[in-house]
Image (cartoon, rainbow, N blue to C red):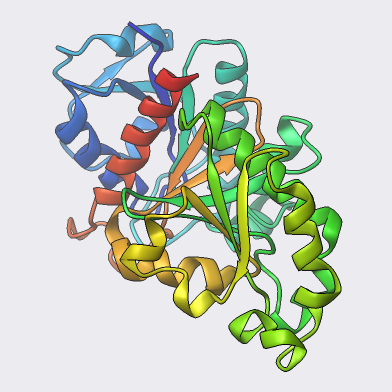
Length: 321
């Protein structure tokens, strides 16, 4: 049996702890994982098994949530984040990376964090999980993919203002994004000959320069030059016709030029089942596509579907590698 998945606790005042319990209740016979965090932060009455090493979590007959204890500085009150716990959240991520690099776990799945709490409590110096994991793995460039059974999308630029996208979107960045996406589709999704569709930056992909010149100036040539080098490429396509059912059947992933161009279609098509995948790391990392949800934390109503899909996808990706 392969090594279990490491599930990082995330922000202990958010929905992460209750979702971990719900995910274990759903997956305990089919997808072994170990939760790393402070067991006192789990919902009251959660059945737990304290482990000395992750391998003990691989028993599909386990009748309690497998836990690798990581003591935090403070207790956790749902909906009320405590900056004293910020360093603990960071250290759990570091511990999970060490475990996956050592082969003790097969993949990492990260519950949501709150960046402001990490900054306030521990001076966190990264925009988010993805950049922190890249730094820990000493990777120069990684790619964020949102994936579900219906669609895989990659934003070439991510958390920047729309007005800054044309400057940030360079030939070098798009080239790197295409290369890493193609490699990830091959090695982690077991697609031997991937097909990637490239969205245009401008409405109607510029419409011959009437609505923008980036396509004419360099995007068209880049896509043509790279077609067949890493995978089959097509585009740039008008984004408004790229995501209907017939169009989606013609590619395995779509690379979009900015955040909302990628995330709006997948969240519209499959809001609860989207999974955040980081490509380009030397290990597998998935995450649910939602935040800490402080407003509903502790009420027992948080939907575990995205976390469940994240764990299942990590298991499948590990099996493919």
